[in-house]
Length: 118
Image 1 (tube, rainbow, N blue to C red):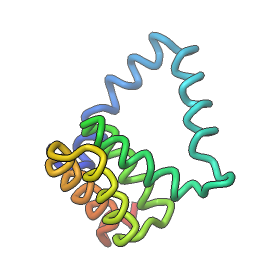
Image 2: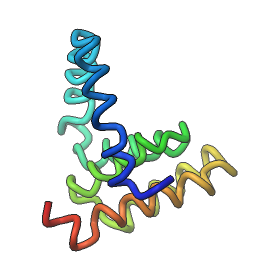
Image 3: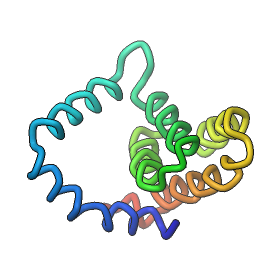
Image 4: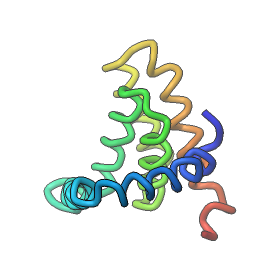
């Protein structure tokens, strides 16, 4: 995976194009996303950590980038991310040794001082 910022940028234009081609489905997905990660019995931060673990297990670099960014924005700590990625390792084994470090690098990219400016 290239850096997470590049992954998000690479997906921006084709995602917009596809969203215009199938607006109802994408609007439905946006509503589902907003409801799923909203604060409730679990905080949005915890839910983004969960989504990051699922992204690792599903081996989705785009998902890793987006949810690492969201976890950082929700105030997840390095310790929380490390422990969450340990759960991915437990549940997924070998492939999590590849995608877990990708998620870790993405999270660190979004928590770097230059990332917090924008």
